Amino acid sequence: MAIFSQFGKRSPEVKIYWKVYLMLVFTTLIALVFSLWISFSALPARMDHDRKQRMDRFQESVMSGDYTTIAEIKSLADSMSVEIRMIRPNNQFPPGSGGPGFFAQEGEWRGLRLIVPPFGNMHIIASVNLHPPRFFILLLVALGIFTAQAAALAIALRPVARKLSLLTRATDDFGKGKLTARYSLHGKSDELDRLGKAFNTMAERINSLLSSHNELLNSVAHELRTPMTRLGFAIELARENPENSSDKLKMMEKDLFELDRLVSELIDFNRIGGTELSLSKVDMNEICREAAGIEQFPGKTVAITVNADEETNIVEGDPQLLLRAVSNLVRNAVFYAASSVSVNIHSSSSWLVVTVKDDGPGFSPGFSSRAVRPFVKGEKSKGIGLGLSIVQRIAEKHKGRLSLGNSLSGSAVAELSIPK
Image (cartoon, rainbow, N blue to C red; front, top):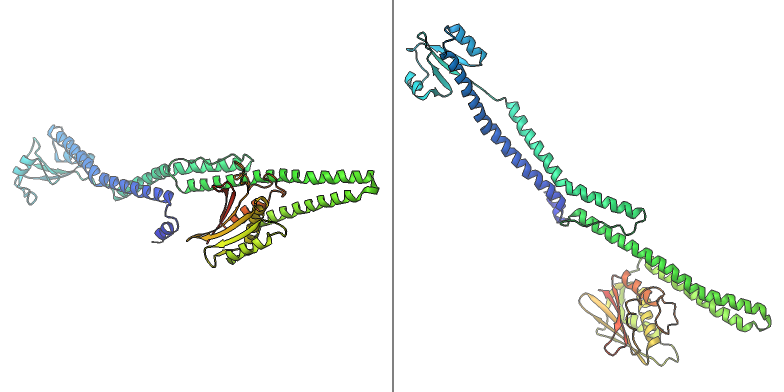
């Protein structure tokens, strides 16, 4: 019961265990039946055949006339391991045998054979007892079972060894820097195949992270180069004309502000990816209203409206991160909108969806699929290209998703989905 509880409840698809177990049971039963057949059918039949042959040879020797005395016949019987009894014709025969007439008619009775020598007035009752030793039978049964189990294990574990070899080779290659190394799936899925799939998923994830890391480093270097170049240029101009350096200082201050914003965004981007969520009950209606108030800049003619299908829409999440995500979406919408931005909150049985829609030109063809990548900017963007990447990370941290696209009218639509 413990085995069934362990393998049945926790992992209902323990195929390797059942494959080996059933193979052993099947081969053990086959070996046991075969050994019993040999011990109680084939072996007794063979021994009966040998007994009859020995009796025939003894009878032929006696009837040949070469042995004429009782002593010679007894010596012959001892040499051939034949048990004999010398009786006179009038002596009593074994009970139920029917006497000499029965022996003459049947030849044998219960393993006893009546032999009438061509000399004298004595009859011979001969018998041969061949008893197989019990140890031999037990040894035969044990040997058959052991051989069958060894063969079953060899057959059942051969694919396991092959899959382990493939998995070991893939992990060794991956550890040596061959990031394209993968475990090749073969046949039906079992525990090792699932382990191989997990390794492939891990390898894909690591490869993707390394690619993103390299891309991020290249993008950071590119983003840093521009303001640093302008700073160097402004410093050179200030050195050449120190009397008119006030304008140059303003340029330098602007570039330093841009560098500070870039570094701050990078810190936030990395912090969100590695920090633990501070979970609590969050009303997304309040989050969206607060984000709309934050992004409603004075003097901006874009109207922001918030609509919810329920008085409260509660999810389990980090309030600060969710506010940051909605604020980034609203900020982008306000930047590209012509006159209005709508924030709609609606919920289903398992998801809460925040939809941010503007009335601007929308995403250019093919851009929505790349917009969540770090440092990817849209047309006329004044940011550094991390806003939507941060939203994507926040969604992933909450086991949600971010969808970007265009509405039927062509304006941009962003949907942030959070599981309830």
